[in-house]
Length: 179
Length: 183
Image (cartoon, rainbow over the protein chains, first blue to last red):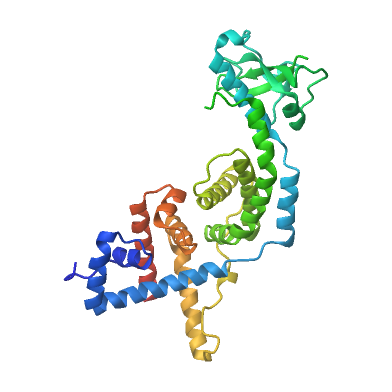
């Protein structure tokens, strides 16, 4: 390494602090005795400064309303992750305890084909209903309320019984409350 | 899977995390919006397209944080999501324009005390570098943009979906091209 000039890649990685420990000493030793490589390093450094300046000049401050709009959107963000979390956990529990604790019915139609089922937010109506099943689960009433889904009346220890349409892909499509 | 965790537990932890997540998102927006904006402008987004993508990126970040997913490198995650959003928007036709970088960026980097001749030379140099950068292949521009934001090669590779050694090679080619064009 000390006889041949350093490659552009090696010099660039030296400039960027990306040399390995094994390379570092050899590169520094070479630079100490090679004016040509030091000049090349200076050239790369100058280009790097130009790139940094170019990048900095692309900046424009955020529109005044952007931050406010973000805050407002975060305030009003629907609680759908809670629904998904609940249903995902419900599915997990069902799988864990086995089919004996579930009531499996024949394949169900897609959510909108059954009036009493409520399509879950963002459920994909275009997916096939083949292989879909209906599972009975118990979901905390608080979670249902937080999700903005009408769960009907009744109280059974804070839990509400529901049927969930689960597609063959394992994703919940719709829910129907039984209470 | 955590079989001992009930639904109520999951929901309670979601709720307790929510206020912190929103606050954290706004803080991260303040911190990372400048870099994300520059990055998307490097990639050819207009200011409007960049701001729209950034807004959506931080809304997704909120969901990401509330889901309790790991955020080992949240900064890299932000850049990756923002880039994907712009790409998907363009594919779907929601954005019908892909603008070249505007000349407003062509501000000379020169000594304010320099004389007219030096300013002219600096301006020429600036224009040549800008032109050279904009003619680079997109992957080279992308790697340069992320490098300018201070990302390590490994992180650049993660964001661009390429290996670390490929990043080094791409950057080398970009620098060699720019050096040739400026010589």
